[in-house]
Length: 235
Length: 259
Ligand SMILES: Nc1ncnc2c1ncn2[C@@H]1O[C@H](COP(=O)(O)OP(=O)(O)OP(=O)(O)O)[C@@H](O)[C@H]1O
Ligand SMILES: [Mg+2]
Image 1: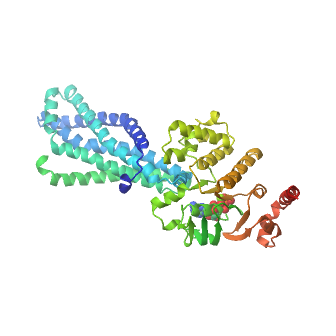
Image 2: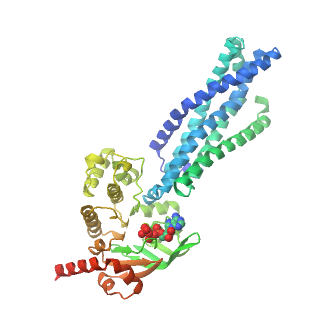
Image 3: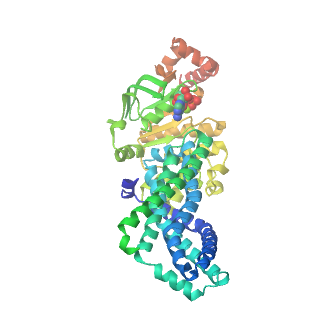
């Protein structure tokens, strides 16, 4: 699939369509996730921080937690649930109804035609959606800070800005890019290798969501782990 | 054009084809018959290189398709049109996009031009283009889908071989006749090597020069219509028994026509 990424022909129209489907289609999901996760997180921590008289730190904690961890993971999990399922089901259904063979019979490589556009669309859209999720979640934190925790809005955003440094942003973008590969590979693989008709497609779809979610969490842990040693000076 | 040499093939542990050999010349038209499950569709899949045999080889245009790189396989497949038994239309594309698929993928023709040719082709296979071209395949009847599938495989730049998997099953008599005429015409006018898999022996008699009967994954018969009629092979006789009446009728009719 990686090699296919650089092979001709490149299906531009398909890629654009997938970007639209994945990006616009998942936007509401990511926004809802961001706003509630951000608020919940801020609420939990503002009480805790208040005990130490350290409420002003809320913005810092929020930024680190959301930009580095919560934003990428939550967005990727939501996208995995929605998009991985869709991709596996679509490719699986095409396989079980002989459409993949029909593509082959026209001298077309299904990986090039189906998998590559989806991979590219994910590489672009998962980071974009993650940024959306981050921004919304931080904004959700702001609402809690101002209306419930009685932290001043300027204070909150000053703290947020202070932690928006290279290391955090780098991790915050690297993760979704890696996750997009995870989602695309697993979803396409499960679709192409689904077997046993409609039931098989259903099984493959479930497996695709479960597997990509787990791998996202595992990979997330390792990126965080490695980042804490390689990016020490920047965090 | 197509050479099949000592091919044996099995899906997992189930043997499907056992030591099959036959050639199809570059303007020859061959009908392949046999009971359900005897391996007819499998032969077509092998010719396209969608599966590779465990032993023996399959050469298309002199090249062993299973030894080729993916890119070279694609080039060969572009020269072969295939009508799948279940149609295998792309269900997320409209009817005209299906029919124009080859042109959209492999040529630089404009959308209007492809649309125009698709409409022509739909008319050619006896469909009302205006009515259905913007519909999705699932909105058509089975017989209509089949004709769209045939149109889709015919509308390529210049196929050198056509493989039809039961192109007339489920069609009404008029459409059947149209489709068979079409197959015959393409074969004769454009010198396209043709393999038709069918159950409808009576239909096949009309145009095929040669008949191959596959029984239990083996070639039980390979020869002309006259040889088929005179065959004393028990398996062949048994396979033909249900058709015998209509078969004789057609033969008689044809002989009257010719003499
Ligand atoms: N994907 C597959 N996996 C396992 N076995 C298969 C597969 N496809 C076909 N078979 C088996 O291979 C044998 C031959 O199948 P094939 O489709 O070639 O038959 P056919 O002659 O075309 O039959 P029909 O006239 O019903 O279309 C059958 O016994 C079938 O069970
Ligand atoms: Mg068949």
